[in-house]
Length: 355
Image (tube, rainbow, N blue to C red):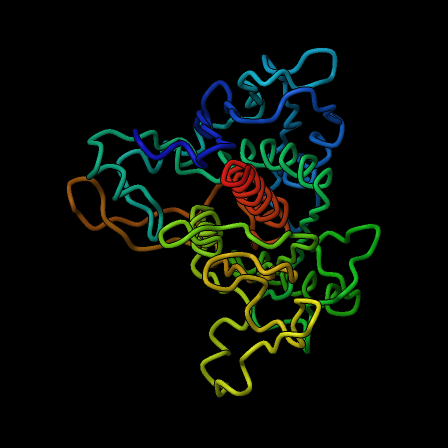
């Protein structure tokens, strides 16, 4: 199965399925002699792990990462960093009812038609459980980026039709996250109550994750097919359930005239506005990069649905299993991870273009 690797210089290859023995990955291209904080890596996994609150899936997984190579005496060696995370709470029998059934809006049908054989247990390779490996790589990338003065932050800005209003590009993040990971307490409480009500209905709801990257130097990204925002878009759209990506002014920019949208330069190289979202011509301009990622409602709902089986006969899919009523609270560290991997990859690529 191709398509399991990401990056050019700092690369990640992941492996494993939702209900297999383990998931994991191989990180290559990490600079050597760098002291890694492995506890910080685990903390990032804890932000993504299932069962962490009442508004996420109740699958219980410790998600403890074990490193196999590439780290010696707490420092990177320059060799590939191998790691794995055991799957401890598989309930494969919970999926026997969909062995020959295509669930609506899942990858069941497309995987079966493409490969002729699929792991139906929890979605197999198409499961969002694979993203835990990305969080490990992203946590490591974050540490390198901080060393270079670059910081990646994300938060939930919308759940259903409940959203943060106004300019949120400069919003301060609290020192301690709430369970929905929205920085405004009043809005967060409304989101939490809404997600709880959706769960009681046996349904799901989508949302938006907003990301801000500060300290980015001028010059990351390259024309024409390696534009920084294009790679960020690819990274975000590779995440399960993502249906939309916009950076800078995004779709709202179509309502602005050029005279309103243009970011006017100042003598120090900064701009009066940042409608460009920190990227111009596909290359970072030194301003903060910000973007939004839209997640659809989780496809598995606790309601019976009409569908077809592998013989293309009409069937009813039972609504059961352990799934998130809203994916965005656990998606925040995943979005941050993919952003960090992309930025570090471009940072290291950029170092190779100059003497």
